[in-house]
Image 1 (tube, rainbow, N blue to C red):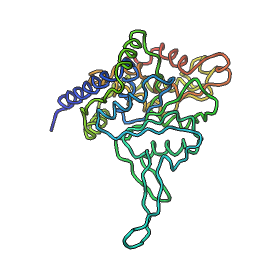
Image 2 (image 1 turned 60 degrees about the horizontal axis):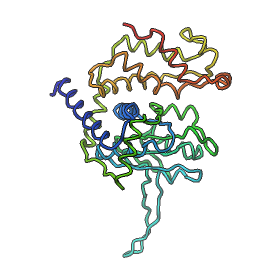
Image 3 (image 1 turned 30 degrees about the horizontal axis):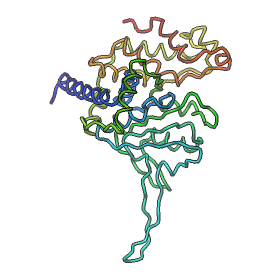
Image 4 (image 1 turned 120 degrees about the horizontal axis):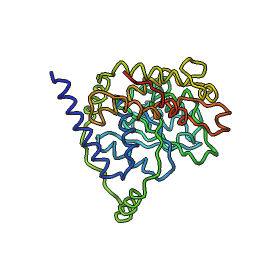
Length: 331
C-alpha cells in the first residue's frame, strides 16, 4: 500500500500539471483558478460572479480538456425548460418490425463538467432542475431515475451588472454551491497580454489531457483524508456561529445588519475548501492562511443581509472580513 506521503507527491505533481495547462490558455486570474480548482478537488460546485468577457467559459473548457472529461455548456434563458437540461423520452419505431418503443435522450446535464451560463436568467422551476441534480447526483425523468457519473462539477455564472429580467437564486439553492467566486478584471499587464494573444490567432487549441477521470476521483477522495487541525476546527465553528445574529459570538455589526447567518453547511464547505487549497499550494496539512483565504468564497453567499445593510452598503464580504480580524484560529 502506498504511503500517505507518496500519494501526496503524486497528487501535487498532477495539480502542477493542471496549473501549467491552464496558464497556457488563460492569462492571469490566479485567484479564480485557485478557487475553481479547490472547489473541484473538494467535490463541490461553484457559483462565479463576473462581468462578461473574463474567460469563464475558456477556463472551464480548458479544465475539462486537461482532465479528459466530458464538457457541457448550458445557456440559461427565460424560455429554457427543465427537460432541456435533464433530457427527454422519445417514441421511436423499429423500421423492420414496426414496433414502437421509448428511448431516453440524455440532456446536457449528463456530463462531467458543466458550465451553467447566467443561471439567474431562467425561472426557478428550471433552476431547481439543475440544482437538484447537483445535490442528488441523479435526475428523474417521467418516473425513471438516472445516476450522473462522477466527477460531476457545475460552474454556474451570474452577471452582477444586469438585473432586469433575472430570477435571483433563493438562499436555500445558493447553499448548494460549495463556494461563490468573484471574478475581477485582469491587471493592466494581463490585459495587454490577452490582447496580444487573442488578436494574432483565430483559434487557440485547447491543451492535451494531463489527467484521467480516475485521477480526479482519487484526488477528491484524498482531500477528505487530509487531517484538519483541531484548533482550526474550533475556529471554523466560532467563525460560522459569529455570522448569526443573537449568538454570543456575534458582533454588533452582525446583530445590526444580518437577517440570517450561515448554517452548518458553511463550516463543512470552509473545511473542505481549506484542505483542497492546502493541497493546491503543496501542503499536506491546512494552515490558518488556508482557512482565512477560503472564508469569503465559502461564506459570502450563505449570509443574508437585512434592508438596513442594503441601504448602508454593508455586504457579506464586509462582514466576513471584519470577523476575520478577530482571533478565531489561534492554537
